[in-house]
Image 1 (spheres, one colour):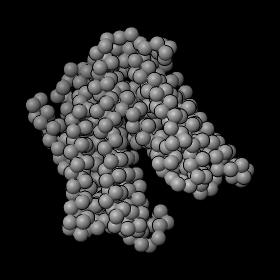
Image 2: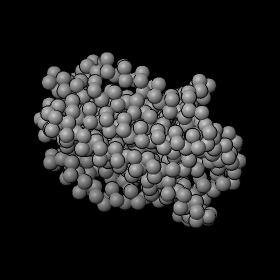
Image 3: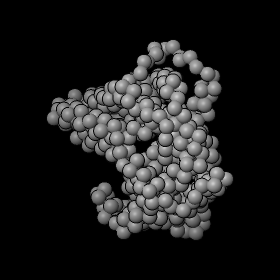
Image 4: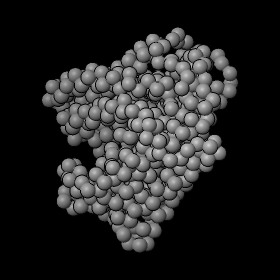
Length: 453
């Protein structure tokens, strides 16, 4: 696939630019909603006491891990629905979405049972004090009953994105956030339920959000005369499509956890600074992931419509967007690399180390922009199996870099926290470069451009 110079915007209909913005902007705002849920919970629970706040931190980490490994419910469903929509098979498109929703409810029910039963042992794995572990267990056991709703939201969002609709999930996320805030205040303080009230409020808000999005999807299905009952073959197809994306997600998660392990080897100050740097990197990823969502929807639709030229043109255009979005984000982070640390910590040594790490984060943003877009394009093309193998290969290439950091941990600690974290984030930037190389080679091959349903 030929690649145009990224300083020269690809020529093409202005409508494609508008489509990208129309999909990406609401998607970005909806992606930010989940952190807002957690921020609201933290602000409310934080006034109950240190044990409760720490317990919320432990339980949230476990809950997000349990839910986020199923992100393929959104990504895979978007690709399936968009491809059928592009082929003009609207009823089959919504049918594929309904199958994905049934799969999400099945996985949610199983995960709820496992998390609720083993909430105590799961929280104990974090090594927190008994008082904190008790609070975490209360929150996790109750919030486990919101997992089916969380997964149904992922699947329903994937359906709507496949239909090129990112506004409805944004409206749902906004209403859900407001409901979560009100319910938590009422249940935690008004009803005096403490951290249990926060968990219950979040369950009710997530379930309500799922019900709202499912109503929108089911109404569309009825209008198109699509069956609503579970179709075993379709559910199996949705599961089979999701397995490679699950492997990809687990490999990505493993890279993040391995990076944290390497940071812990460097000492408390580098670890603290690394966690904040990774948090900022994650927030920047929301903006880039919004472009990836647009790429999924547009790629699936054009390939479903047998439009190879349109797929190439849209890909070039989205790569241009990804590059310049990365440049813009990098400039913002670089400009604030001495200011942002002040917002997160009062420890000067952590601030100094974080300031250095943020410069590397800034340098890597253009690479990240290309990575996210290419990832979205290939997901939209249904190229999940290759993506899984690529991500596992990239993880295998990244681990030796972290091993070098581990081997030289003593000398890096002696050189100071800033130097130690500098080396770690250069290694992580190498991880992103490895991803870019693998994705770019696959994209240039053109073998992923399979048309039709």
